[in-house]
Image (cartoon, rainbow, N blue to C red):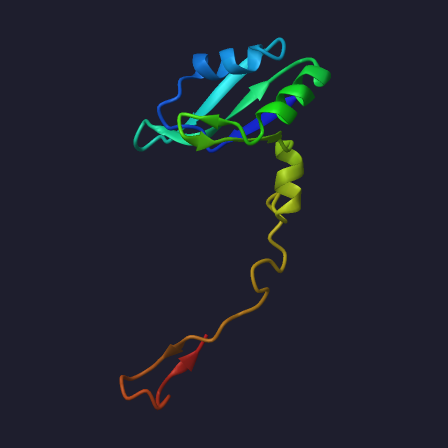
Length: 119
């Protein structure tokens, strides 16, 4: 089961996160998300545990736990495909975001619409 871990301390290392979750069972992967621009942690990450019962126990016991003064959130991670479809994404833009043309006044500076065109 893939778990989302939020509100992580920004200086927490992946190995420290792994050790925390290994107290509940086998951990197959750990990933703390890093901001590309700054190279620093974004304060969240993912832990994958192959045994669902162990993952559920870790989630139950660690959700709301405090690490270095921060209260972490531990939840079952959403599948990327599920997350994209719930946002209306997927590359289909038919009628998206307002679905229609908007009028832009391109005219003189008097604001009276004289000599303006609506697009």
